[in-house]
Every structure is written in C-alpha cells, then in structure tokens.
Length: 235
Image (tube, rainbow, N blue to C red):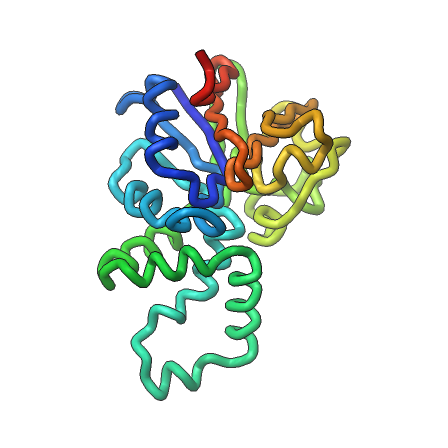
C-alpha cells in the first residue's frame, strides 16, 4: 500500500505516529511525505527529521520550507572570520525570508542537536527529490510539493526549475496531465473556499492534500491504492 501526506509543519510526532498506526501502516507499505515537515509549530519538525533518517519505507519529497532551510545552511558553519565574511546581503535576505516563513523554531531546535545529527539531516534533505512518480494498478501518480508553474503537457519534468515545483499555487480550474493524477500540497485547501476547510481537494487532474495540519487542522493520511482517507478522529 502507498500512502501520502503533506505540510505537517511541526505536527506533533505522537499524533503522526498514531495516525500511521490507525491506518495499519506497516513495513510492507510505503509513505511519501510531499514536503514541509518543518517550521512554524512545536519542535519545528526536528523529531520528524530524525525519524525520517531511520525509515527505509518513507520518502520526503522536498518542500519549499526544506529548501529555505537548506539555503540557510551557512548558519551551522563554524564561526570564524572567514565564515562571517561570507555572510553577504544575499544570505541575509535568505535568512530573513526563512524566518518570516516560520523557520525560527526549526533553527532553534536544530541547534540543540549534535553536529553529526545536524549534518545527517542536512545531507538527507539535500538528497530529497523534487518529485516522484508512482504507478498503482491502472493509475499513474505524480507527487510534487506545490504543482507545476508554467505547465505544459509537452514539457519534461526535468525542465522545471525548483521554484516552479516548490512555490506555485494552482488555480482550482488549472489542469495538469490528463492521464496522470498529480498529488500536491503547499496550498492549504481552505484557500480554495471554506467548504474545503480541513478536507482534501480533488479536481479533474490533481489532488491537494494540504488540509492545514500546520495551521491547527487535523492531519489527513491518504492511501492511494483505494483513495481512503485516515484521520485520528475517525471511528
């Protein structure tokens, strides 16, 4: 079985693990987290990052928040005159942007870890893919954090820039591939209307699974094999 979830943003680890247990997630299954496990809440997703390092059947797809953290990895360099000289206006801008988007809580908690743990986390994030493709029975899926800016069905996925896959917010009328279901997050479904608050949004060609878990809504785990949704509050 293949499961997907996205945009946890520091969601409590105990609740996340309870949700996996509720869905009977096992070593025989696979989970894709479609970006943004960090920032904004709780420990900033630090426990989640450490957990991911040990999971052979879980893959994080890079989100814009992980990309922002990587752009600020200079913060973890040893402080020397040389390292201080390398902090230019561009790095200040990157850090300011990251902090504005809720990165402070993650940075604070990463600094509590050992140097080896931080380096392992950063290396893991550097190796996270921008997208994955999955085939289940007769259906093909593209898993990508935010959608595809400047989309064309004739354009190769490898031709998209990272920003086009990490920062776009599709209009509900936008369409992607006709023969592939695109699963994305990044834009909380509430943005498309109050009727989608806390709910997965399905269009003709794509599914938005960012239900707002990072904004206080209940996290939803989706099983692609049978399109079943799991919530902790489910009976």
